[in-house]
Length: 96
Image (tube, rainbow, N blue to C red; front, top):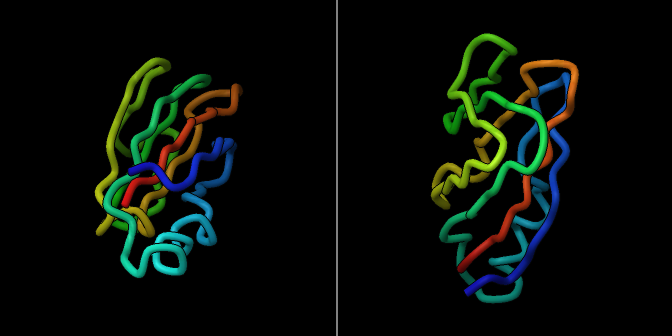
């Protein structure tokens, strides 16, 4: 069940999901986020799910239109950065 949606802008500095949105699962439902289903809507990005900060040349490449899932165990460690001059924009649906 989706409990929260957000759009995350991925710019020239590595960022992750909004911590308050991850914590919301525990406060609303008493459990951790199960997964985050994401769609990249703009700007190619690179990402890691282990807390390591990706760079513009190192990390898994995610292209515009790609749908990817970040498991709940990795959601707080997810980090992404844009690869070029256009910021990435991901739509995220958090599920419990």
